[in-house]
Amino acid sequence: MVTLFQPEQSDSRTMNTLEGNSDAEALARSRLLVAELERVAVEREREAEEDIRLHLDRYKSLVAAIAQVIWTCDAEGEMAGDQPSWAAFTGQTFAQYVGRGWLDALHHDDRASHAEAWARAVSGGIPYALEHRLRRRDGQYRYFSVRAVPVFAEDGSVREWAGIHTDITERRRTEQTLRDGERQFRELADSMPQIVWAAGPDGHFDYYNRRWYQFTGRPEGIAGDESWTDVVHPNDQERCLERWHSATRSGDPYEIEYRLRERTGSYHWFLRRALPVRDPEGRVTRWYGTCTNIDTVKETEEGLRRANVEADAANRELEAFSYSVAHDLRTPLRSIEGLSQAILEDNGDQLDAQGKSHLARVCAAAQRMAHLIDDLLSLSRVTRAELRREGVDLTSMAHGIGQRLHESDSARNVEFVVQEGLTAEGDANLLAVVVENLLGNAWKFTSKRPNARIEFGVASKDGRPAYFVRDRRGGVRDGARGPALRSVPAFARRQ
Image: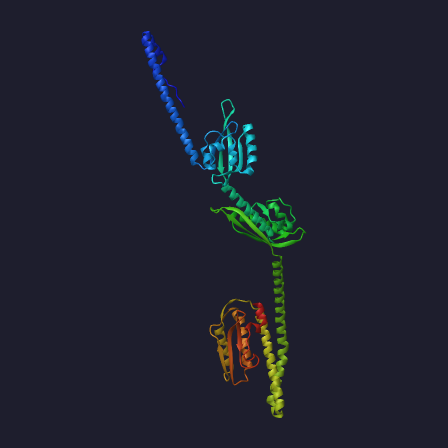
């Protein structure tokens, strides 16, 4: 800005001075005054030019420092004058960009539409905003956001245009990456047999995959809780809403089993799960969830429940039958055994060897029947017992059973060979029944041998441990092996 020179003395004092002197003196003084005014005016003009140059250099430095491309055009929309920012980015010379030559730096697919939009803005004197591709000096095209505004003169006419190009290539790539990711997510979600859904951080449902619409028959475009609550079984609606709103408030994972109505009107069981997506500060930005049909699981659970009820009923019937059999059979068996023993003792001298043999066989059969009754009662008690899984030392257990068998008949010469370090996980009481049953059978079926050998160990079968009892004679065949649990089917089923 140029500031006009103001004399230090007022005009009235100057005139008084001039009037008090002769014409020659007044003329001389006037000349001196004019010379002084001219000198001050020249100095002020130089200062103004220096200020202008300073502001212009500052503007040029600012243009060079920022990443945007800054340019100006005349009132007709043609580029005129030096455009350092434009030339630095595009590599165009003044002769190339002057007038409308700058349009040649635009991508050929964008050139016509941009020129048309620019012409409308210039003719209407209105701001201009558009996106297009601009060729960099190395030949690569970059996406730019373009904005230009008219600069008006005092009379309201457009004096010139000032514009700026902002590089948005990376932003466009990010946006495209997000669009590609969303498209891939939707394609993946639509290919899944499950129902997939998404909601905002406040729990507002805004996306379902194709499977949802196929299953429910709902029209697209309905969002929020209204998009799903009316297809939930009435008995499950309140529970579902309460748990969902609780999850969105706390940010905890969401899981519930509920029934959804199919488009045919029938209800099916679903497992509904959702997890929150969080930003680096830990704030929930999105919810993604699935609904998985679990009708088969529910049917299996119901089948198992019915099977357990039936098994319990069968066990109670078995127990009742066992006690009934024990009560009804023990009395006649005792009579048979007692009478046979009495005949042998009282009338044994009247019987020949064959008769005595027959009576001995009758007594042995009665005793075996009594043992079978005892085993039947033991089995009923085993099947009613509650299972407790724990680590069991089978080696110690087998040694203890072998010792008791030796004590029951110390006259026998039986060698027990038990593998060291045998362990298993299961119910200790039931495993004791299994091992005692197998070792007891081996003990009984080797009773005719003067020297017997019974082995208890483990072998590998199909990559799993198979426990076995092995002896030298019938009952359990010499050299035979088999998983111990197979000898007690009821126990195997319970495990």
